[in-house]
Structures are given as C-alpha cells and as structure tokens.
Image (cartoon, rainbow, N blue to C red; front, side, top):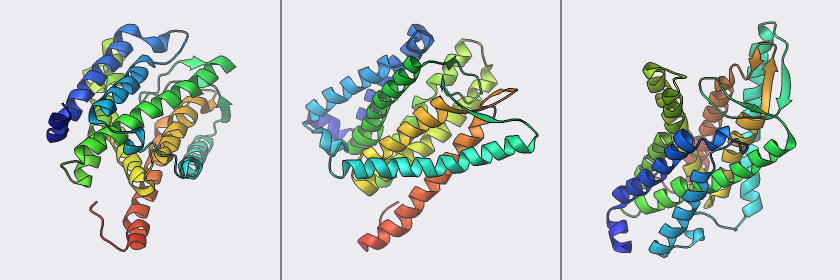
Length: 286
C-alpha cells in the first residue's frame, strides 16, 4: 500500500481528495451543520484529520514529517499573525475609507458570520458562538493545512518538482471551496451563471492562498506560520471583525479579502524570491 501510494502520488492525492470533498459536500448540502446551533460545518474537518492520521500511519510518517514541527513554534505563529495583521490593517483601512468617501457612517462590529463571496451570510451573536468559531477554526486550519500543504505537498513532492507540488495542492485547495457555491446553487440562492462565477472566484482566491501558505511552509519549515495567517483570515477577518453601515454588514468584504490576500501573497513571494534565495546563496526552483 505504501509503495503504491508513493509511486502514484498525484493519483493518490486525488483519491484522498475525492473522499474528503464528498464528505464535505454531504455535510454542507444534506447535514447542514452550519444551519444548526453550531453554526459551522465541522464534521468534515474532524473526518479529514482522522483520514490524515490514517494515511500518515500507512506511510509511516510522523506529524513532524508534514510540517507540524515544534521547532520555533511560537516564532512561526507570531510571523503568521504579523503578516495577517499587516495585510488586514491595510485592507480594513482601505475598505473603511471607501465607505466613508460615500458619506456612509461606518462602525466596527465583533460578532460571528460566515464568509461568502456573494455577500450573504448568517449573523450569530453571543460569546458561545464566538468561542465555537475560534474552536472550529482551529480544527479547520489543522485539517486544511495538514492535508493540503502538509500531506498532499509531501506526497506529490516525492516524484514531482517543488513547483508542481505547490501548484497541484493549491489547485485541489481551490476546488475544495467549490462546495460553497454548489450549496448556494442547490438552494437556488444563485443561478447557474452565478455558480460558475463564484466557483471561479473561489478557486482563484483559495488557490492564491494555497500557494502563499505552501511558500510559508517552505520558508519556515513549519506549517504553523501559514496556520496562524489562515486562522486570522478565516476566524477574525471574515468571521468575527466586521464593518457595518446603515445599509448592512460587510457590503464590500470581498475587497477587504482580495486586498489582504494579494498584499500578503506579494510579501511572501518577495521574501521567497529575494531574501530567501540571497540568504541561501542558491537558486530556488519557483
């Protein structure tokens, strides 16, 4: 089993991915845990961590082998949070100024909502929902970073270049997010054209994030920097900290997210191409 998985790396990752996304879609479309008291689809993430554990045992890999290294743990977490804080400070400022320039009264709010590219989301208030949001997002980053940046990258890298491994896992990560617009299509919140547009948007945006977090993994040798940035993006910037006006909440959140992600992506790529290459004194295949 181990030898077969190593020989057919992309096929292996695609097979694992299909199992995971089927469970993801089943929960989102049929179980709809995000519409219950919990307010989040978390079963597929727990299932993903279980699958990750099984595959690691089959491969005889340790968690350290896919980036869960405790070396410089706090430093890497701090680096990820610093990157997120910098990027979203700029993004929130621009979003605030754009709204203010239209003569709109803007205020910050701290409550839980779900992220959606079409601007529609459920609002949940109360400390219980906030604590659950934090908990579920911790589970989310462990599963997604461990699976895509850790396991998939590590398996594909066995017989492909680093560039190919980064791009393939990022593509799978983008496709992973198509479940959200599919859910909207089934509920008739959007039409087929909207589904296609939102799907492309999710694949591109999530794919960019996937490349960024993979580069952060390669730069630090640890998943924790990317996990910290991922957590801040999902939990704080899109789920908890919002800009509200008399017209609604997060009307142009997509601008905030795009600015923050493109800015942080540019910073990481710059570090990768300039600082890291110069420090090692060698050419890196990017």
